[in-house]
Length: 277
Ligand SMILES: Cc1cc2nc3c(=O)[nH]c(=O)nc-3n(C[C@H](O)[C@H](O)[C@H](O)COP(=O)(O)O)c2cc1C
Ligand code: SF4
Ligand code: SF4
Image (cartoon, rainbow, N blue to C red):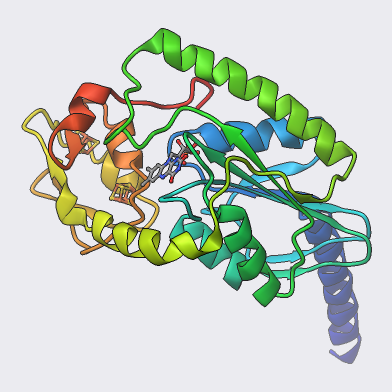
């Protein structure tokens, strides 16, 4: 009996040690992204491939990460109302990330018109979590805020994505050189948050989203909502939270384009998902 316990505890130790090593191997060099319509996913994957990192959606990510010396930590995020999406801000503030030695940390905000003050906001949130942000970049991409922006012309959208790929290539070069500083443009000063915060609070009320009769009850919107704001009731999606992230994943991915926002402009402006999604 005593011998068995010894063997079991030694093998248990070996298994624990092996699992720890494997976990650390899996977690090395990380690019975290959030993406509702694929722009940030595409950007993160392209960069990860180019510099030998792993791109992981924050919706599936482990909140614990230990970086080795010299390893890279990246965040790729959309811009919402000139700021970070709430889901990204929460991840930056809650993740337990241990830096180790000479790491390089960067942020990329994808945007349609301006990344606003998202870099400054990320720098502050990460600093409060003990993470120094070395560099921030921005990539102009199709603007999925189709309340204002028209993405109904496939050729125009293709051109925008082609230009975005050129911009991604340039950012990859800067990441390889480990450039420092805030390279986002066109930027907005941090004090605009006073106005954008309150505008966003009102815009993200789920009562602004509505359903059209073309819905076939497939449930995709409910399944994919990052904050479970939609539930299926009698084969119809119902918004069960007063506010949501306003990511527009439900609107742009619906196979029947049955979800609209506000006064109907979204219907005219078309649906968008990045071609590599
Ligand atoms: C609610 C909302 C607000 C947005 N606000 C801005 C903004 O302030 N500035 C901007 O340039 N783009 C804005 N956008 C556009 C997105 O940041 C942009 O299309 C991004 O690339 C989408 O990334 P994704 O495809 O990975 O979700 C907004 C999009 C949404 C849905
Ligand atoms: S994804 Fe579209 S069609 Fe499917 S349940 Fe949601 S609204 Fe209806
Ligand atoms: S309800 Fe739609 S817009 Fe709101 S968080 Fe969920 S998927 Fe995004």
